[in-house]
Image (cartoon, rainbow, N blue to C red; front, side, top):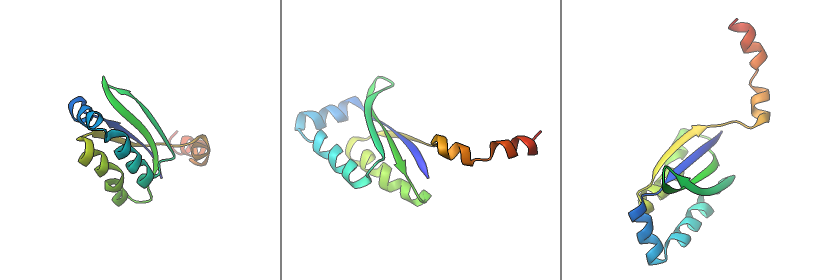
Amino acid sequence: MRFILQVSFPVDKFNQAVRAGTADKTIGRILEDTKPEAAYFTAINGNRGAILIINMANASDLPRFAEPWFLHFDATIEIQPTMTPEDLQKAGLDQLAKKWK
């Protein structure tokens, strides 16, 4: 199932990684291991952040995606399920509308 994983980095901890020259390498390792469908880096609530599109087969996969960000950057995350237009077409909205009329 596809999810949006939003990562927010605390300024001080991320600054330490940038100054130590480890931020790029660490992020690269995390992305290489988790293989997100897409990854975008942006500002989130005034902090550095990332928005990743990931696929999880089971809820037990969540630590694999979240823990590297927690352990290396003290990041906070938010995760939410999401759909593509094709997924939405398969949802059966017409049938649901009829059922819950």
